[in-house]
Image (spheres, rainbow, N blue to C red):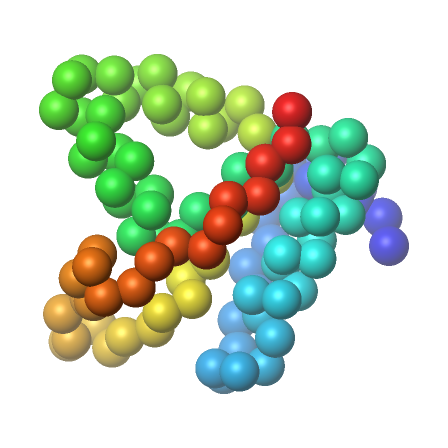
Length: 103
């Protein structure tokens, strides 16, 4: 498998029903990118929101976003799905997965 789409900064959106291996697929792609010397940032929607909130309080949000944008591949896994009409789970209800980063 080639990672040309990563070098071209193209977007990949993996969609499908729960339990079909979407998170597993993007994790494998992230590890493949790391194996090819790419810098990969892994976030859930929740951890990305927390990152912005944490840095917004001390006015360093631009610095945090700039650092994130330097990644060759940014994986945002929406591993916990909920309907638009439902309230998202609280941050204490589940832990984000281990981050996968390579320098």
